[in-house]
Length: 205
Image (cartoon, rainbow, N blue to C red):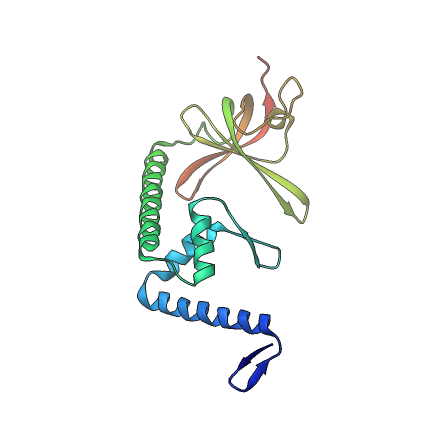
């Protein structure tokens, strides 16, 4: 049993843990006062933590970000060198996102609607994504496809022509299919022109 002054400490482990928590809390406060962008810094390194279902940290991921998260949780702060490294990563990520946004904007500017509403068209498309969601009427599927010019085609529902190859195998994202369908609607979502189709039927090669 340890003694502080004249008062003995009955639970040394709990006392030591409390002291450590206090040190880390104070380190956090100093870190926040020192770095005005502390929220961006700590937000970036949060990707290095593994959480359980209750939101508690259970482990750290391998690599750079995981090591930073572990250091911050252990010492309550990052070193100046670590801060500069994180800032560089954040800047690089922002540059990549800006480049991607520019490319998407340029692509959206040249995308076109396909056919006319009510017209029956034959399309060779690449399956980009299957999205499944629940509704009051049961599970629903949204399929996002693109033609060779990256024009976007949307089909809502389930169809043998889209979900199954002629050989019976299930269609996967990235697969190419050829179908006939009726143009149901021309729409725009997030600045991207989309052609909605209905009644797709497979075209056998």
